[in-house]
Every structure is written in structure tokens, then in C-alpha cells.
Amino acid sequence: MNSIIFGAGGQDGFYLSQLLSSKNIAVVPVSRASDNGIDISNFDDVAKLVKEHSPAYIFHLAANSTTRHDSLFENHTTICTGTLNILEAVKLYSPKTKVFISGSGLQFKNEGLPIKETDEFEARDAYSVCRIQSVYAARYYRRLGIKTYVGYFFNHDSPRRTARHVAQMIAEDVLAIERGEEKTIAIGDLTVKKEWGFAGDIVKAIWTLVNQDDVFEATLGTGLGYSIEEYFEECFKMIGKDWKQYVQLKEGFKAEYKQLVSDPSTIMSLGWQPETSFADLVKLMLRK
Image (tube, rainbow, N blue to C red; front, side, top):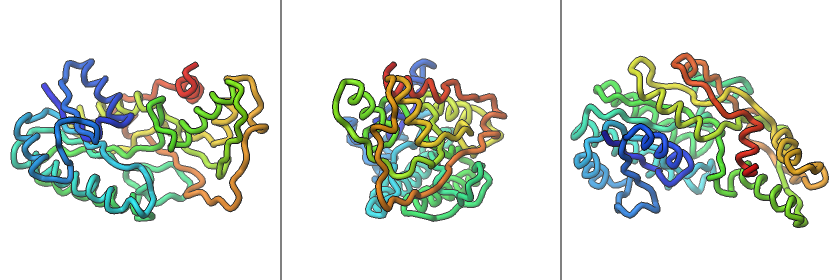
């Protein structure tokens, strides 16, 4: 049995590859760094790969995770065109393949309440426009008989994050402070609440979703929200220092949201539960 992971170079692709390998499922990785020359935005490339491997599973995790408008066309080709290319290739050459399409909690209307997969979409930025379009493509191909799953991700982290993500940026600065470096950490809004799930847990939620045939869309998150301030507190507690001495607020900063937390009742009803606590994630990020 084999699988294809588009976006295999990211943190989710890494942990998903480990999970699949532990189940004796071979992984064909596709990423910017892979040497197979596959471009997800090129239908011929994708079709050739699907036709060659006839995989049991395809996971579309590829994206530039940013809401910046200047990433509109990059994300359109990767998320939207990539989704269509995968689904059409599966329809033509491997119709028994199960396809997972990643979505985001950011594509929903956010009124400060826990978000569920049945909630209303809102095209609030360039990124959510692409995510919404890919979901409608998934629903269309599901009507054509393709088992297409959508998992809506909320914030989840791991030591494999890059420093442009706030959890990793803070963790790296905290470790520098522990080593004795003089650092001031600039942050926008300490009160913003989001989830701090572990990527290794979230890929297990993906696996749970694609291995049943009754539910095809679900929010994949812990359902537990913690503020940026609470993350600072936990990180600095690990190194025995007072975070307030090292953090400075950015003037004029306006957060995209005050809270971004899931209602994971659907995925939990299928038997999945997160295994890594908030404190455990902080230990992982600081390698403690």
C-alpha cells in the first residue's frame, strides 16, 4: 500500500510520513525540496504521478501558510489549482484513492466562538479565498464518487516550525535568553487566544478522518485556547525567568482575530483525542 503527500517538506508532512511509515504505508513525497520534479500546479505532472502509483491515499498539505495578499497567486496555484489537479487525476486514473484536502479555521466567519466544520465561510483574506475554493472543489468531486476529505486545521506547532511562526520565534528567543543573550521579544497582542496543538497529534486526526466513510469534513483541533501571554508564561517558567522583563508590545499592532479555537466534537466522536498538553508542547518547543 502506498500514499502521496503533497507538501511533504512541512511539519505536517514530516509527522504524517512518520505515521504512515509506522503502518507500513510507503510514502511518495512531493515538496519544493523533493527531487522528483513534480509541480502540483502542473496537471500533467500530477496525473503522471497518480497514474504511476495508484495510491491508496493522497494528502494535499501544500501551501504557504500566510494571509498576506502578495501570496495570492502562489497560494492560488498551490491550493486551488493543486486541488483540482489532484482530484481530476484521481478521477481519471485512480478513482479508489482517498484524498485528504487541508482546510483552515481562518476560512470561517469568526465571531469569537469555537468554530465547527458546519459554520459559515468568510473570504476575509487572500488565503481564505483559496481555501474556500478548494473545499468547493472537494465537495464537487465527492459528488462524482471520489472519497474526498477536508480537515480544517487550527494552530498547531512542533519543533519543525520555522521561526516565522510565533511559537517557534518565541521558543528560539527564550532559549537564547536562557543562554545569556540580551534579547527583547517584540509581540503584537498578548491577549489573542488560539490553539497550541502538537502537529504529531493533528496528523493522527487526519488518519482517523480518512479511515472511515461516514464523515468527510471535520475541524481538526484541540478545542483548547491559550493566549500568547500564557505561552510566554509557560516558556519562561521552563527557564526560571520572568517573561515581563523580556517582552515589549508593538505599537499600533492590530490582530487578525481575538480568538481562533475549534469545536472538535466531530473528529472526537470518531475516536480521536489530542495526546499532548499545552505544557508538553512547550517542553517540546524548548526541547526540555
